[in-house]
Length: 194
Image 1 (cartoon, rainbow, N blue to C red):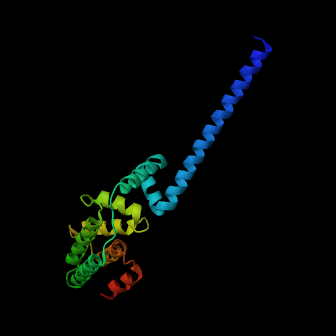
Image 2 (cartoon, rainbow, N blue to C red; image 1 turned 180 degrees about the horizontal axis):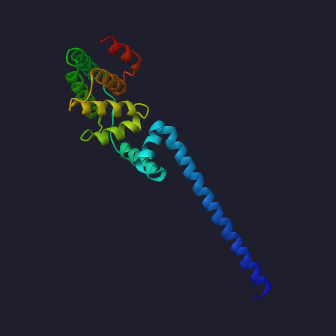
Image 3 (tube, rainbow, N blue to C red; image 1 turned 45 degrees about the vertical axis):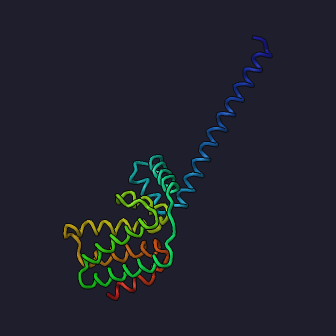
């Protein structure tokens, strides 16, 4: 080989190495930006999903699927009449809770599902409801998950009255956000007074 050919081979090799390094660094930076964006959007739910999905790659893929699924839904806000009707339904369930906590909790669980259905969320399976709540209300999905777990335990008489009360509080946080009321501070006071 002539010195010119060797020089061009070396230059080509260096260019390929630099190009490869740029691609690797760019890919890592995009991954970091995606991770940061998902962490920012989902908050503590990011860690929950990563932990329960078998790692960061699988967890982030799940969160991306949730975002895509949610973006494909036609979720709408409730009008004033619907908000008023659902708020009255919650008040009824809360009053029922005072006399028969199990009935009040069951009614609240069903009411949350009705609100979600009216807004356009899928409601057939808890896992789907939970996933959609995690996209739109990531700070409240933990409350929803906890309330649902207590409601399920209660169907087998495995929940005491204090747990039922906590489930009502947890449901109320989400309920207020779903109907557009968003006053969870008063919720805690209202249920403690019961």
